[in-house]
Image 1 (cartoon, rainbow, N blue to C red):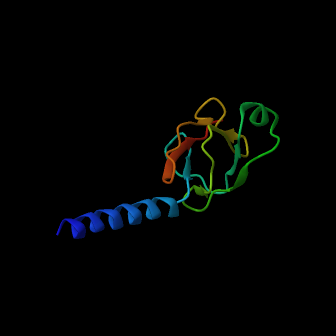
Image 2: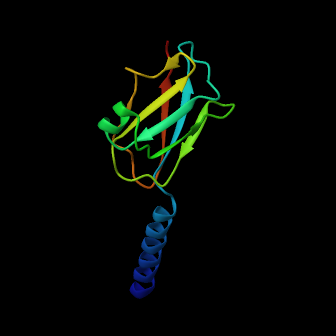
Length: 116
């Protein structure tokens, strides 16, 4: 009986470890304007360090938000990322430029606010 219980715990542990590794570290980023409405077609860029962010060089990932104001970045490393969001004369400068403490093997949800 003890052997069966032990075997069951080992199997559950192995399955839970395997499941955790299947989910890549990612960010689901939503961009909103000052009124709280979502902003589509916003150019969003991730940088691995502040220097690259300030010079707009060596982006890690980038793209445009969809109709729901969202963009999804996956397979991220355990870093503090700097994020730039721009659409016309609106941007996120001075408001939520750094993504810190991403939880590994999870979808991290972040909202950015664009302002003029």
